[in-house]
Image (cartoon, rainbow, N blue to C red):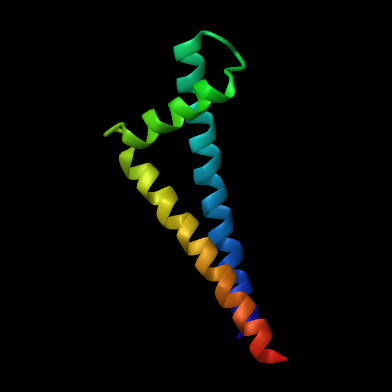
Length: 87
């Protein structure tokens, strides 16, 4: 049973990582576009996160990222519970 949870968690993590990298590059593109700098600062990046989360065009991806993050956290808890129960 534990191996199945580990495989599912690994697959979920790969999907989450792909969405997170997409989000990071999208936020960086927004921040760089607003500041004109190749390396925008922390303030510009935080504002760009807000823009990305509230933009109707990126909203489905943002919500998917939120759900995937919750699922990764839930799977981590399930995996820890299964490891504790097996002992």
